Length: 267
Image (tube, rainbow, N blue to C red; front, side, top):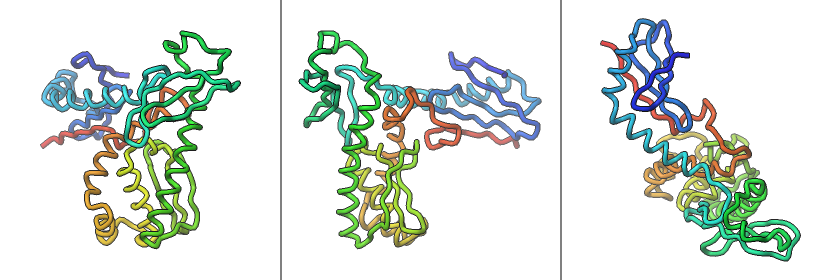
């Protein structure tokens, strides 16, 4: 593997016989990657990277922030997103025999059994409780999302034949030709405005099974600022990743929405 160093960043160089110009890609938690031709020298590649230095710095900074949001140690005072707000984790003692999570208006409570309580609960990581955290979020999400689907279905007179819960990495909803709607329960971390947009979007596919002009006009009637909401969703799309089954989570090769890409064509 050919590696270049550029401003303390590793750049993976991929050479191809028929590559025209340079294609540069950045992605959270991965080295920067550039596709070049076999005859391009390292000095030429570095000159191109220097030309795009501000672009690289901008996206590297954005990805650093997103990666920080994704990796949330399960410990006291850590903030966890829920319906657009941040809730600090607070350990509290319980008479129950097992750990569990609950929530107040401003805090996420970790209930610690009395026999396991000590001053160390305020400094320890509880990563082994990650499955219980997922269960808590999923229960809350299913109740809330179902209520929004019921509300908008009645308002729009559009009722799915089946409502299912999924958790793909960056797809928040889908609608099948048979009238089944799938919603990603992990989007409970987003604001109600984003959640409602996704629900409305999928319900409208029961009437418009495409992304035609008529479809977007219908979306605009119900969500006038849907373009801004979509942008917010794209910016925040890694936010639910702390709920993934394995931590830390690296987006798959096919998950491209947060990738920054730029190309330069030869004359």
